[in-house]
Image (cartoon, rainbow, N blue to C red):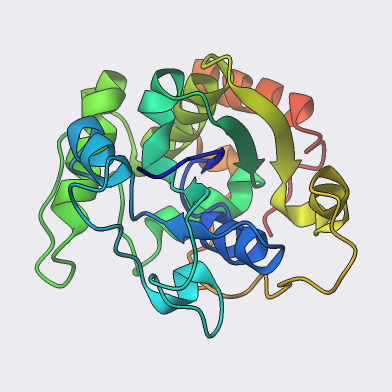
Length: 234
């Protein structure tokens, strides 16, 4: 059975792959979307119970590491958020300025939240499964609104879900680098620091594009709490 000590949770497009590589490099083998997947809680339990293998890409575990060399102690996945209360693992809540999260989600690499229902996109075979998972756990996404409003609403509700789990040990802004986490884990050596490991083309947008006043207010409140006081696109 996998002794899961840490779960990294965020919105997606916020640095979960970087965090998997970082934790692995510090001696805490961490998979990426290998336990928590669109298949939900029951599959996660099967993987933790080792009834199914934890399969993630080589880069998800760190450079030059295979899934068979190390005992997994952590998982980094945005899809862990709805299930955090079910596990005793400490949660690292990773956040990124929503300007970057939304820009990535609406870009051609993901095309998230274009409709009030999960959407199949021919060029992205996993797109529908991921959107079905997100819409299942945030039903408000099914309401009529713009793509940008829907992305911002997802950012708010997903982070709130993580906060309300009662399992968060630390909230880490991905923009703050590695020092805070090295201190948390008592790590003094050189660790993984390629924050661009999963960078993909994104789109440009503005906070003035948000149509819903309540979504904009809630987003700005959350940004202020997270220390993002500069409403700039980056």
